Length: 398
Ligand code: PMP
Figure 1 (cartoon, rainbow, N blue to C red):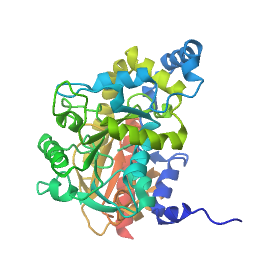
Figure 2: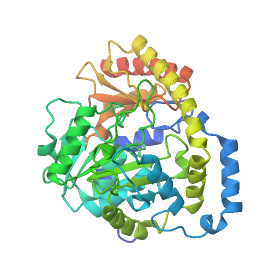
Figure 3: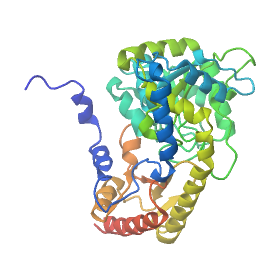
């Protein structure tokens, strides 16, 4: 066989645990609490079928040809209008359409990271971001955004960028409070460091009104097109359908131009067909009409999961009830519990969880687990938690 691909070197470094829990979702009979999937019940199949049909029949020029690299102008305009508020004025020049948030993270790595660059990152961090940036071997400066002793200026000075998921972070499900958002924005202005606001869960607030976006907080002058330090990432994956593979980057026009050049060589353009469907799902009101039902479904699942955890896990884990998003983060009460091992024992008992090691840039944290509550029915969530309690006792007894 010819030479081993250079990229394989980075796969060797990827935690084995990642491969195990990503593959586990396909085991029959297993309750998968480990993935980050939406509930499939949310999909409006009939409405989407109509939009897909009309996208081809009525817009063949846009959907069957190569689309412009930066995205269909009407979708960029629509995104710019949806996010413009208060002092934040956006135009299409502030918007790049991507193949989901995943591509946005990849492009950011391409244009901003060199070998060994410093990244200030909320910790624990989204696995997909860590995986995307692994080939550049960044040095991570952890930011514990829930801690009161955070000094964002120290963390961000000299970093290529700061990475955050302020709304219901993946993996912890926690919110970054308004004061910390403000401090991060001030630190970005002060240090001249890009501040990434990765926001797939920003609409999934179950109990309270949404907090201000850092993108909005960082706008300095009403009327002038946005030119600030925040690079905002949005996606349809959690509120419409991940299969569309549509996301967007909102940033200063100069940054959009650089990211666009990287996208040009990556894939020429995002599917025009999927962009047209997404445009129409927003323009017809379908996406906004779906949201209350999604929130009701996920709120009920969050409640069922937390009730089952209250019943079966209080002697084994501590956790906070999330007020939105898709995840509960639970930390073992007994520091002797290795959650990498718990994942394996869990699979033997028919339940999959994600262990904390995969969300730690160093892979060292074995204390906690991420539990998803959006994908499974309430009954399955209860079964999954019962199995998790049994598996945890078995792992502790080893
Ligand atoms: N960022 C975070 C924090 C996520 O949780 C996800 C999805 N799991 C993404 C980005 C990427 O999502 P997508 O590519 O489906 O838009």
